[in-house]
Length: 320
Image (cartoon, rainbow, N blue to C red; front, side):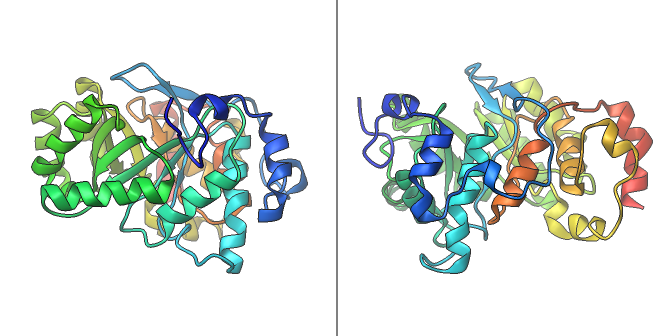
């Protein structure tokens, strides 16, 4: 079996001694056990999972995006917090870590931190992207991503913002056949691209779509989420906080009484539970560089996930 990350095979990862032991062993990097960190959440059970339609593999519903949050210089105060972010994700049962070569140091930092602090239980699900033009340039970029992430196989390779997607899709299909990647997909983050995203979804067989969706950004509900469900495509949600602006505004307001009905102790959890309430959504990847925020976000993947009728009653009040 080929090495997976940091010289470990996937089987070795799965034989880890458990998250607590791993976290304790990585204390030199600043990782501390979840019980030793201030927690702004109440754990209400195991994190929910949803199946990837093309394979049936179960994926935890909350992951971690690395845009901005993981683009920090080693040795900086911000970097020192990142091992704790991964520890909080794994301790909560999360697996998905999403990056891109356009995110500065994020891929390299992710690979370094994973190699230093392998988690117990299930292996992380590593997603990254190709973001360039031309076949050879795309191959070179993806090879570099593998080196930075310290792996010989990527779980999910995505064509970032549909850049030169026809060329890269041919390469990704070949790499999937050869086992270099496990899944392939496309991404975008702006409503202006939804028409093109829809056309690609209708024309091509994909495993994943990564798209923007939030309580104040619901355009994908009309066509893209139903189409993904119809086509058997897993959906990863980026910008679940509406790009950050909505969450910043809400933090100044007290939580409404109905938040307790769905097990939420923060506005971040409310916004994530909204996203996860849609049955077409497989996983949300809020980005953060703070362990306490990762732990808080992960709590949204447990307990009650409200139905559409619940949000019909309460969504307007949140946005008002």
